[in-house]
Length: 637
Image 1 (cartoon, rainbow, N blue to C red):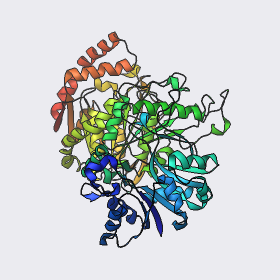
Image 2: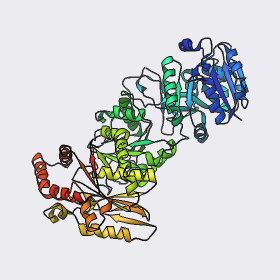
Image 3: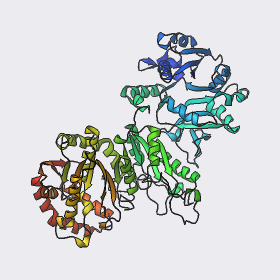
Image 4: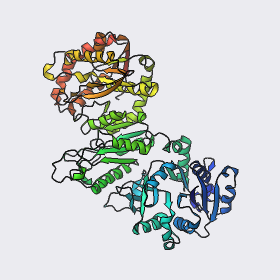
């Protein structure tokens, strides 16, 4: 029978106006005493043997635990006598405790998947205890915990911190799984004292291992009126219930360099080189407050190249977490790949110079995060600046946003096309939390029409929002109708600049588009792979590599591009066409931004816009009359 020890001796001085004469564990939390909430969670995970250590007005807790609702629990109540501290009180009753036991603080409200916590502890065979750790939104004034690469605690850093150091954002949440046989011999060393301030440092100094279990689940100290009210609000809004990772979680996977912080030409190898883009902390806080798990996944070949040690990388990430923490924000976890496939660097570390499965666009780090956090892939996002980020998202079936900072999706390293492209991380976050929701409601009106079609054509002028609409439609077909769709950008078949004709239609290899369309629509195989070309915007020519996509017989195809209506007309596919348009000033502004990213001069950009007016607008607007549906975008998505 699993056993828990609840430290319930607190007087609750700061809550006295709410408690009256009651001891702190009986504080009313939205109509239910806190102790009752704790006992019900423990019973759910089969902790049926409960020891409650009491002190102040213990009679109230004794009477409370006699209630019929706790009949399945074997509850033993022990009065501490004089206060001994959390560790002292626990060590005093070791003769009554099982070999493995859970320590619960009597002033914490929590909703945690305790089975996952237990499984992690079981993997740490040599640990004297496993501490439940999590990031918080104020690391600058919190007592922080330092762990090593193997996940063991190596130090505690009480507030105030040394101003010359950077510290990772990990906080002790006051929930422990403890091995009695590993702490028994220290019983005589401490008769009273606190676990964190006194006992755990003794264990570490004596060579015992303390493991850290990092989780974003809800556990809060409610020892003040303000904290109590905040927790009640979280209960009523459903935050507490949704936080338990028994339930699927939604996540935003974030790239680091070029997405959150400025690129460094020779990579970032020192904390001083890390400079965040504007509003990064505020943007991540929006995700935190909206219940998105924020997970950083980054390639860090500087380790393999010998340009940066793992300790220094941890300092870089500590600085990152500290800076965003000043905005009240936090990252739920950081995963990094230290490998690099190519040899020949002067100071390279041989063991990291390998072809691995964790370096993006490979997906092992994502798979680990998905397992660690129980992530709902269909509702989650990747935000990054490179084709590696896009590729990882596509391999996993995650929606992706490419930000125009850093490489801006134009590194051409891999042949993957962006789904959504937005200027900065701030724009990406606003789109995920607001813009996408409003746009998906508009697109939802078209679902009954387009769910009946195998081919959908979305046309419009350059930078009018076609790609965004196409990918929202793709995502909503899957989420709302469980229909798998592929967005096929007609820009894949843009001709090299020297082979183009005079007008918009002569910029494309239309014959090849029609051939691919015929191939897709005549294929009888249940599942097959299709190789698609790509276009290198910077070089203005076809990409050297093709992209392979897997297609099933019942998949839908969304053909998106300036000439999509022209293709639909040739194929006699008029009934399933959508024309997208937007404010002309906004569209021109986006064209200017696009070509500035591609290093065009202002004069060249002006000439391009002028030429497009002559060879594109008149033709495409004329073709729009053939579109069955028209959609005006009112905002810059």
